[in-house]
Image (cartoon, rainbow, N blue to C red):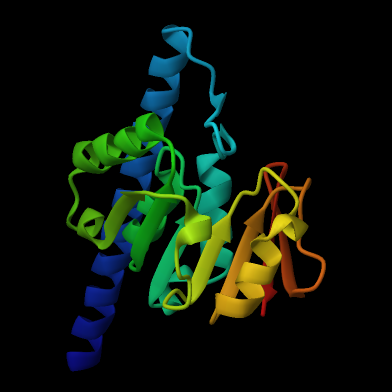
Length: 195
């Protein structure tokens, strides 16, 4: 009898998580539609980098593949509009977003408020340059890079990273980190590295 109730609790947790994930997907679909209707492109120069939207379904599947829920602290370097951080939070992990752009940081905070799920308490956003941040407390680091790793980021990761690094995109990949897994979802590539 007790085993059945544990299984029912696990099913309820899974259904709740899936509900949160679907709400996040719907909220970002609405956000993208709003931007496009108002003539705002889904990409922009931030002054120190370049932001472009990440396919929300691909992010969800990649985070499932790397078993994000088994990690303790997640960080998105250059978190943009917050979608990756909120998805990680909905999947049961403490998630932090670091973004240097005011508008994008405010978009992420607005989306967090809009989604209104208890799991959103696991998400936090800071306006900061991630190159100035100590990354040693995070055991899963996510980045969708807009420049080559050899311009300082790879050295920083080798010095500070204490866990895994998930890199999104085909253009820029580190050259000296240990590749562990490659995931291709909906035309998006994610590569998991160890240090």
